[in-house]
Length: 293
Ligand SMILES: [Zn+2]
Image 1 (cartoon, rainbow, N blue to C red):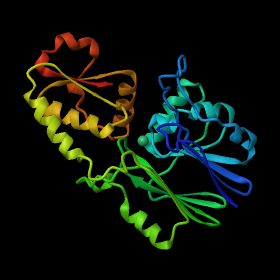
Image 2 (cartoon, rainbow, N blue to C red):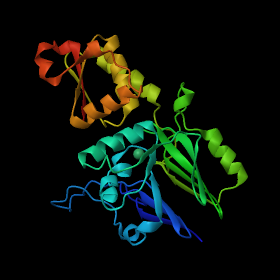
Image 3 (cartoon, rainbow, N blue to C red):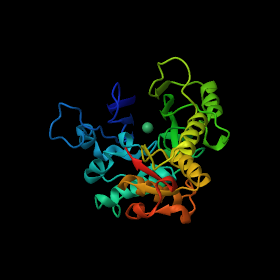
């Protein structure tokens, strides 16, 4: 019998973790944390209850990470400390995971496996196809899981933002192809999916940022999630066109810019980058600070 067991993440933001099980084989999708709520005094982070995984540790063949947000990867080190299983993810996701594992001194012990959208991973009796999705971080994937009982689709977090660059859009045609063949179950999660209408497009956000930054007379500080790589690039482009030097501030911002630059997802002229310690050497109207919130 096919079992799909959420260990967290349903009806809540954070703690995303799902088990897919058939017979004596199971794999996990995501291992997210949740930041504590107001009543959780003294709690740093919240992670899913993993008793079911401990009880079935010999059945677990791996974990697939859909994207690099903390509510999908934040609990991963706590899982891997106890249960050493292979991790599967796309290039950017895997690099962020690697950095996280270094912090926990786990990187040498864990098998990290690169997957690409369009590829299929076999964990018998499952076949898992990776489908590109657009999201507020890069390199996200949804999953089409062929099981002995039918196809289960897990969309991952996604948005439908038809940008000019087709390589970054949600791969709707793959979802349609899978849908035509018949789907046993669809698991779909997208914040504000129940709100009617459209979200403002990234291009529109870019135009507005450009307008305000170009008109700003003094120092500009842009706060954002470090994982929003496309937004970081938008601000870099605006800074360059306004001849403002760029300062990346915050540990996660610096780390993500480093990884995304290495993988070719961020393009920033090194001559435009300044260290935060050099800020007073920059005229206010010639600098922009990109910082975590
Ligand atoms: Zn997400």
